[in-house]
Length: 256
Ligand SMILES: [Zn+2]
Image (cartoon, rainbow, N blue to C red):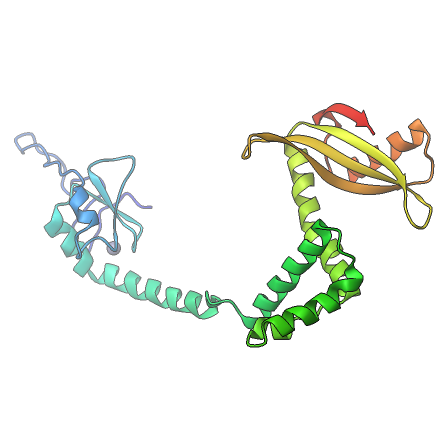
């Protein structure tokens, strides 16, 4: 932002175009008038300067207009510089609008959302994914006029993919980010999965400031070859380092 005077309007950032003469009056000070913010002629482009009560900002030109009354502001509005900048801004906005996706939700997005809700429901209530397609058939019969329901296609493989690589992945990124930035307690729970390999569930106990409560969140499942204390320590440490979670953020440890 320049500090020189605006050649096309005579307005100036310094508030004065000629060197001060001894006998000249003090420069007239014009404070920003809040009514300009609702004035139809001004409200679209005049902004307040938070740092100077005598300055108005033209948001089109990104230009400071010091000690201006309404007539000086209108003179700036009519200047070729302002008109030119306004045209450029309008064209840019049109291009942006052209590339902006419509606010109306696309049909395929509605279907994806519906499938995601269904997968989330099945995971939360322990409904086997093998039932996914049967459930979808029922929904289609229940709402025959609904295009979204008609286009839902979800079977066991897709449901488990959406859960593991979609919902769970996203959730895990959030938990890891939280642990990178906050203190937490580590909870580990060792179990054996269907393939009889040792799996360690790594949970974190955190204080959720937004909800004002303590929450236990799943951070990761770690496969362990060595179930000794040293082996578990090594596996968990490696996982935390991979997620770039500082070990200093751990304030407690539970083993279930
Ligand atoms: Zn302007």
